[in-house]
Amino acid sequence: MPIKKRNHTHITMLGLKLATDPRWVNIVESNIEEILTDHAWCEQKAATNALSLIINNPNYTEMVTALIALAKEELEHFEQVHNLIKARGKTLGMERKDHYVNELYKFMQKGGSRKSSLVDRLLFSAMIEARSCERFRVLSENIKDEELAKFYRDLMISEAGHYTTFIGFAREYGQGIDVDKRWKEWIDFEASIIANYGKQETIHG
View (cartoon, rainbow, N blue to C red):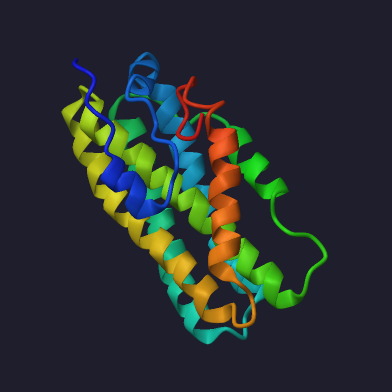
């Protein structure tokens, strides 16, 4: 399959600096079972992250309402991926470690105010959604499996909405914090680590 040009418009919209090389999809196609298992667990972790934000910040009513809906959607995605796995005669594998997310997690500010901690957790969440959205676009445009191409195009749209939700609340609740400056720092850090990825058949690998 010919390699398509990287969509820099999509990258700019999400704020990401580096696009995923479409040849990553060739690695994915060598082990579809692995990417689906990894993806399923990514959706579970995304739902858990939303619930954790709710548990630690129950007084932010608007955010709690939005994140309840988001967590439900992530669990629906988990179910959808699991259904794909079952339909292909496979079983869900054990949870995979997400080294990319673990590296991002280390960049979160420690020891700041409750407000700054919330803002950084929201930006951390937005960052993951932005990269997931970008990876889903690359899959949707380059994978030969037509069922998966459509599936990832639909999910790409959903992930873009989640990215917008997280970054929107970071800006709304970040009064007195230069949220845009901190987001730029996240973008720069993400660019410094993502260059080491794109070599494994996992969503962020």
